[in-house]
Amino acid sequence: MMKNVNLSQLKKVEIILEGEHQEFATDLLDRAGVKGYTIVNNLSGKGRHGFHEGHLMFNEDAVLIMIIAAIPEELVEPILEGFAPFFNEHSGVVFVSDIQVTRLVKFKN
Image (cartoon, rainbow, N blue to C red; front, side):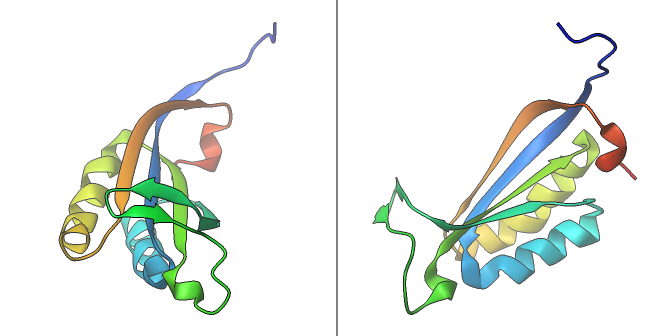
């Protein structure tokens, strides 16, 4: 068992959308004050519109991506409100879950 490990509560936001909208999503996160995020490209999966295959050779914009960020709870609502009009017009989803991190300084202003 590890001693003296301080865990801090944060929220994990996972945003799945088409690659062509990556800049919109990262700009929204930056403006909301998110310190950093990870982008995973070429997702495959099944949803309401059927199976989506990653690794499209000719059109990177049509590929699904996931943006993952660990954020303070107070940023969740502004981020979800920022994405609401977008998801009224485009496909995609946002997942929010509780997480714990060891190095809070990496995630808070």
